[in-house]
Length: 182
Image (cartoon, rainbow, N blue to C red; front, side, top):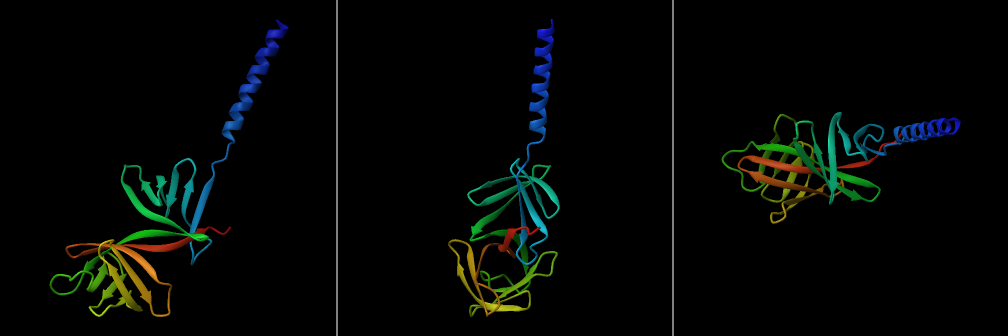
């Protein structure tokens, strides 16, 4: 009887230890911040498939440099999340509306962010102005849906992805993100 009681106690102790080890296992989390504010996390990706982006909770997948965030209602949003040296480029989508007269001629014309203050103005001579302030030259690759922005001594050359549907310009704009500094 004493021997079986010892076995039962040992078995219970072993099971309890396994349960405690499982409960204490750590979930690894990557935390990312915009490069201009390295201390504020804007994106957390846990190895358990959970994510937080700009304060909202999601499940996520990351395949072929495409980050797909899915909310609790099943709505999915996909963004390019491309390695770039020690940082990544997180491509966030912004929707613009054509504000010129008539119909747009490709990207040429003035585009204002829907429900926002951002803007692009593309001229027919290859120049642009972003947000009323940042000027430069642009080159369009219509086949691949890419615009190369060459800023006048302000920022590095930037590649944005775009599509036009009627009077709506949708842009995927790259924001450099780095691991959050703590």
